[in-house]
Length: 478
Image 1 (cartoon, helix red, strand yellow):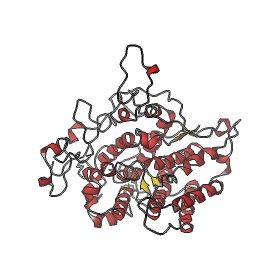
Image 2 (tube, helix red, strand yellow):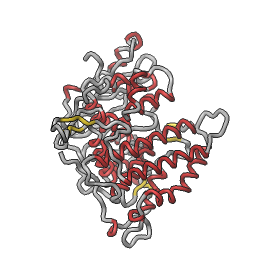
Image 3 (cartoon, rainbow, N blue to C red):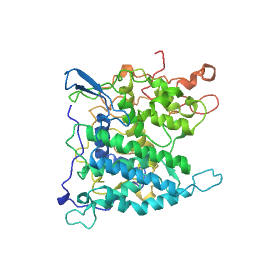
Image 4 (cartoon, rainbow, N blue to C red):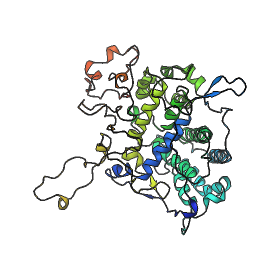
């Protein structure tokens, strides 16, 4: 299967612009979902994700089939010069933490010394980019006073958290991903390689970036940005679960379609996220378990209590590829379709606000319909019409890889069941509906604490909503 990749632009004929904020109100999210930027983000995510699946190759001496998986620090992945340079840049940012120790004394929220670290990084990044990227991609385009460097800096600076709010979340992670996408579009990466360059980006740049972010969170006690708390997947990150689940997917050849179920032989069971010994062993090899290990580092108590969504996903019986496909859908629904996450994303020429001409209108989802309402004045209400109540009706959601089926996002855990299509039916369209359970995985010894109303998605006797479940998760024993 030929993997769609981000296009490389012709820099000599390109006009760069200073990235600006475009998403200011809830209804702007639907406009974003029809933009070129959204299309390019999805293409880049799928491009990186596909490269992380294990490969079926042939031994050059015996001609026997060999399964090659891609663990952290794998010696089988050769890093290009650009990848090594950007990995070195992340290392230099990491070393700045040593120069800016946290302020002493107990604090309930983030440590203010993070602002000093951020200021130091912001001041040094222009020179660091000069040191770690070739001058040819940092120069201005044709007839433009703005250089590619200005666009790169905008996304890179936004990838390490907010110095004002002292927090970090998936919106900042998205900004760093866009920075790497810009570098790809500028031609600094080797686009001709068959997945090796993408694997180098994930394991050689994104994983060290995540390690840097985790150190920032622990050193400066950064708050989760826009977190759903226990109702969300993770307080801070999403990409390690996406790429980490692909690492454990079944081995494929270059001509195979991306699998939607199954696992790599000898991969740990998804339920092993609750086993400390397995997590300790696998976190040095796999991005998913590396993220789980960080949760254990910073949270106490039963895993099913502080991370119910991840616990629910651990009950999936159809393998890591099934989890990976669910993670892609969840990334669209819970990151790219959420106003609190994407409102701080900036748009320039490399990730453009312009409408994607190939976007196909699709029905709206519960995610796009639950954005902050647009203020409405009396003057804008048609004569004789009742003022619109609640949220603004939003235009359809687009996905560049969508089929004719409708894409519908996951519902809130306390929402009543309706005739809305299951969130797993349309992306990808090949998902087998018979393998999707509507029953959440229950925590150990929870029978006495779980009522029938909890299991049907209604409020329990205490008035609290039941735990949010992954729509593709199954109970053990099903």
